Image (cartoon, rainbow, N blue to C red; front, side, top):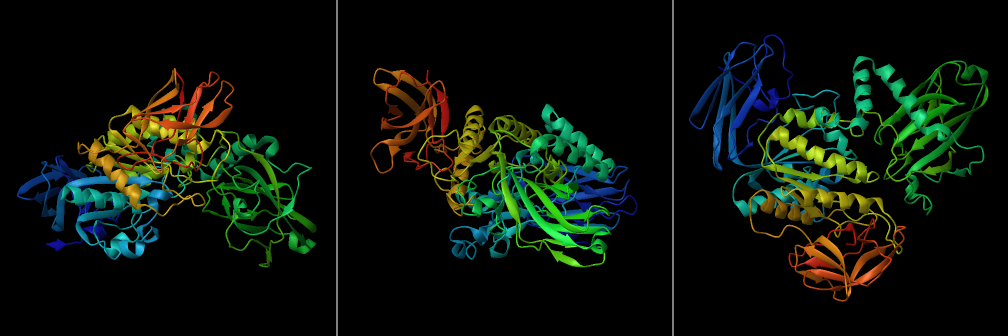
Length: 629
């Protein structure tokens, strides 16, 4: 009998004829199988062939269907192991060794979940001392797709926790799992599937996302892309042009300035650009002879964060989206001319950094092979985005589109049984808290249905951005409040706040240990039923009293770090004009000054608020906005 390593076969596509025996990619040696659940084992084989599976004295057979798919179900088990699984068909056998039964968690999100242990605080200690044989890790390779996939984009497999597997694994996920394994003394499996910069709509299945009317046009455009990519790209470019309207090109009276470097415009040292999300204009000029201008050419402008429309002499030569995607466009014959040629790039920055970025050369390559550098760029600031405003995005672009990461990174997991989910995402959607309030419950329901489990843990966004001395209706405060309300509305949703452990000038704070510990507390309470405090003080009510405005909190008793008064509270009138006020501490209340004109209380409503209100579990109070009763 031929024995083939499972991890190698897991990367092979299923063939229509003479198909090899292949397990679905989530099954490999060292895997953790979820305790207390029936265990499906599935894969592909020769159509019509019989597949045999043996595991811990249990044996099953299945017949591969006309497409070669097969599945068996093993009975549920308590935590234990190690076990061996043998799978055979048509003289082939796969042997999976060192399998454990325990708890399995799926960790997902954008860059702060993707952030690796090797970059975390104290990594010089954390990585070398990570040998934990009962903690197992599975890294899902990056993959985007317009259709659900059965395979990962590259060979991968479960690994024991050790320096070589931990260094590039999700830090938040690892530290959460390490805490849980140490507490439970059973095997814990962690599946990491994240993509930096990705919006939440990338992680929702098509079936779920199409229930939201505003995404149906994007999904129809994805269908068009599947039929003809060129036509779909043109359709999207037209939508973008329509959305830009009069902002598509720089106004005639634009104030042009020299571009100081190749960094994001937020890093130019200009206060007016430090937090600017909106439209910006770049311009470069190049002189050509008639012979040089006669043929087609190629223009390369490097990476653009996030969307660009690139023109030469007023004619569009390319438009695309994706902050990591280098722009390389064909310039058709006739677009260039003898004399001075003007290259205009309209940049749409949807959040975070913006502009033409990176050190890659920006060039114009002529038809005769001559490469001309594009230098001496100038810039003009356009209009900022309104709150919640969003341009049409390229729905098939991995990491910035619609449902492509679900298709490429979640769908290949099949229905692998899980204990629950850990989610760290929201920065990419911070400009649209209202939309997030609809999408976050949708994702939770979508994943629960697929994996048939309820516990869902999320990280509330860390502090990031400028310190504020005056109140503002901050978009990060709004999104944190959405996260709070989603957690408050569902007893099987836990929330770990990171509002006090971020970094004002870095959207990727390195203290992932405390985030992981707080997620583990939520897991112990939500998923394991332990009587542990897993939340910081959370508002219950805001009422007028004879002594002032009382904010009552759950998850007390309250305490103030450093003593004194509670800071970070705002009283807002009917016109949403707000002022900072301090509060006096009670056991479960904060008493704010009386104010007959106040209609709303806001708390920690800044990008980087200062927190001094905690509970006895050393967990920070969560920000909120609530009307006064």
